[in-house]
Image (cartoon, rainbow, N blue to C red):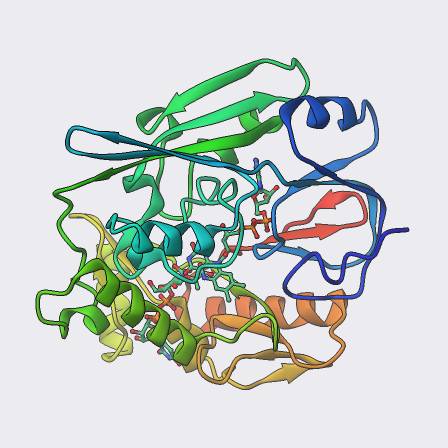
Length: 330
Ligand code: FAD
Ligand code: EPU
C-alpha cells in the first residue's frame, strides 16, 4: 500500500490502496475508477489523512505555464500541477505584479481556486480570469469565468455538491499593468510606496516568522476558518470580552480571528499525544511528534468545544480531513 506520510504536509503516518500521478486530462480519465473511493489532490497542504484511506489517490501533475502579452497586461494559463509559490516567484522575476501578497502559500496552482486561497489582503479569485475543468464522470471539459466560480472567503463553487466530479486542469490569471498594490494589511502598511518585489519579500519574511515550515514541523496551515458572526453577536461578545478583535465584513457581519478565540480559551502551546496548538499562531495545529489521527481529532474537538462554551462561536475546519472511507467532519 503506498505511503501517504510524505504526500500531506501534516505528515500523519498513513497509506492508501492505490496512488497514481496524472500528467494530462486523458491520463486522468483513464485512471479514474468506476467504484473505489477516489481522492484528487495536489501537494496535500490542505489535506490531512487521519488514518489509512481505503481508496485511490490521484495526484495532479499537469504542468505548463503560457504567458501572453496583451494591451494592458499579461494573461497566464497555468497547469494545475504547477507549484503555487514557484509561479508567484516567476511572475515577480518577470516584473509582473499582482500575486505578490500570496507568496509562500504551499500547494498547487489547481488547488488555489478550490478554497480561494488568501493572505495579506488578497484572495486569488481577484486575479483569476478563468478556470478549466474536466468532469471525470462524463469526460466533458469546460471553462468557468471568475464570476461563475462564485469565490468567497475560503470558498468557491468547487466546494459545492455539483462539483463532486470536477477536476481543475488549468487556471488562467490576468495581471493588469495598472494593479494597485494591496497594502492595507498592518505588516504591509508600514512600507513606503512598495514595489511588487518589496511586498513579495515582506510577505515571505512575515510568514516565516509566524508560520511553521511544514518541511520542519508537520502542519496544514490554519486548521479552522475565521468565523463570521452577526454584528449583534459581536457586540454582545465585546461587552463580555472587551479586547476581542473584529473585522467588519458588511453592515450585518463581523469576522473574528479564530486565533484570538483559541488563544483566549487557553490552548496556545497545549498538546495531546504529539499534536500541539502552535505556540506562535494557535490557529495552526502541528505534528510535534509522531501524531496520530485520533490525537489530532481529540485536540481539534476539545478546541471547538471550549470555544463554543466560552464564546458561543462555532469553529469550522479550514482543512480537509480524510478517514478510511473519505471525507470526515468534525
Ligand atoms: P491539497 O491539500 O492537495 O488539496 C486541497 C483540496 O483541493 C482537496 O479538497 C482536493 O481534493 C482539492 N483539489 C486539489 N487539486 C485539485 C484539482 N486540480 N481539481 C479539483 N480539486 C482539487 N491557504 C490560504 O488560503 N492562505 C494561506 O495563507 C495559507 N497558508 C498556509 C501555510 C501553511 C504552512 C500550510 C501548510 C498551508 C497553508 N494554506 C493557506 C493552505 C494551503 O496551502 C492551500 O489550501 C493550498 O491551496 C492547498 O494546495 P494543495 O495542492 O496542497 O491542496
Ligand atoms: N492572534 C491572537 N493570538 C495569537 C496570534 C494571533 O490573539 O497568538 C489574533 C490577533 O488578534 C491577530 C489575529 O489573531 O491580529 C489574526 O492573526 P494573523 O494575522 O496571524 O492571521 P489569521 O487570521 O490567524 C489568516 C489566514 C491565514 C493567512 C493570514 C494572513 C484564515 C483561516 N487564515 O490567519 O491563512 O495567511 O490570515 O492573511 O483565514 C491558511 O489558510 O492556512 C492560512 C495560514
